[in-house]
Image (cartoon, rainbow, N blue to C red; front, side):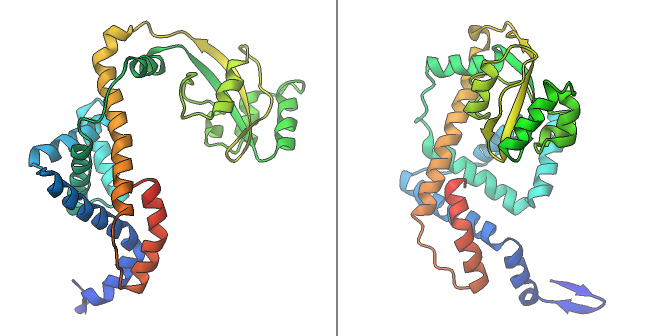
Length: 278
């Protein structure tokens, strides 16, 4: 496969190291691809180059509305994940195959559109966050930023364990329906007036204090004005959920016999992760 100072580096010497580095991930891709081919054949579905190009377009659109920026980000994503031409084409094939299998199962309802409209165009809150490892520590920090008179921003920078600490605890705009934030945190925000600091709220990684900085109105875009864009957004999100469910079903049903001991160990560790989020 290569020469180093005139000395041959052979496939047999590299293969165990390649397996050790990413064998479980690559085998997972191969298993899902094989099960997909079987299911697509049963359904009489044939993927075309146009299907793969459509998947590539969806990835680009999800990265940025600017074509040049989207291309740059895709290149960076591929470098980070080690997606050369073969693995990237495999990703497109798996995505296109899963999408073909769930096609026609998605129904975009009016309540779903209304929720999507509120999430994208409705009122929002600007908040700052401090996360402490224990309840006692969170209570202590709350006293510092309330009765102690210290700046919430300064305490967040110095003490918070959350990744937002570098920004003084500032989070992206929070909307009541945004389930990417814990329900307890959203409930705490809903009960605050501007300038208030919440009581400690249990979150992953500890206990959070949240300060309501500003309440912002919606942007004025009506549901009818945004209907076409929101319909596509809701459809794609629902498709993605069904595609992940289908991938888990296919992987669960795979009869995999792994002969290489190191690859088998990697596969056994990888299967639960694949079933959770293929």
